Image (cartoon, rainbow over all chains, first blue to last red; front, top):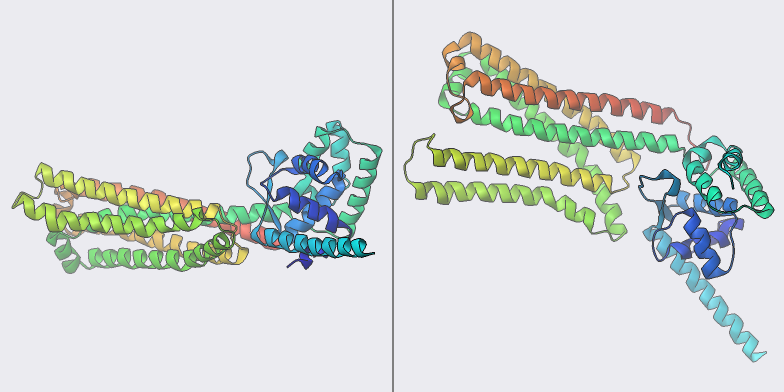
Length: 106
Length: 310
């Protein structure tokens, strides 16, 4: 399951940021961009954001919500999206722990 | 960024991408200042969108929505036909009508055509609706959404409530009333309350199933199957309509006294009750057939849309 995020090539990091942004609730594109900048300190370009969003939607990790306002369509995590995010974050947590441990003993 | 410039940038994307994300992408570009870096970012993204398309056509999504809407419309039309059909069944349960159906071939054949059509329509709705309900439930349970399963509980609960109310009337209320005339005001009021309960149960059930299916992401295969079943149901509804119409006309020709009498529901004129039932059935059937044609057209268009590369 965790491979779903890491297999997105150059879009895997933006995809991870999007999944993290949607983890606390639905957001539309611009809200995601602002949230990612605020929480991850990275400003995704509009093309990168929607390129990653399209990949995530195609893999059913996120889904659009029905909205009267097509110009501000919100997205949310699917169950498999939440599961993939959790798996990827656990991988990164293990990697961080291993890296920090090695630095401490060096 | 100004709207004109944003729209020009979106035009660089492939058609399917524009159909799917164009509006919201333009809105996002308009909402914040765009730097040179953003221009370059969009340029790379455009190149990527052409080289590795990710988007199923929005048109395809619209078509799927149309098929879903058609299926639900047939369900609603069927619910109204059921209400009218129950009225027809109630009227024809009297001995005079049973005798007319037995003694006059045309009346009898028309009556059995109504029964056959009703059974076929019910079977088509159940057979077509089950995979859709199953798919919607599976998806809702996988996502931990409790609202959809609760909505699917409404029809059996409505049925249980209606049957329970009818049993209370038959086993408790009527025996307590003692022997009263059939069209005594109390009897009429209780009968009307039963009709109201049935109407409420039928409409609440149709609403709940519609809401559950609308809130769920149901795949194309169960929807396509449901549409074919809905087509069968619509034709069965037409059989019910024609049967009911022929039944009334045959009754007028072969048992004119009964036709002109006051043997309709609640002692209303027979012809008026029959006519009202036919009108409701005709409207329901017209809606069902129209929805079916619209859905089949959408399905044909959807099938003709080229599948995007994966």
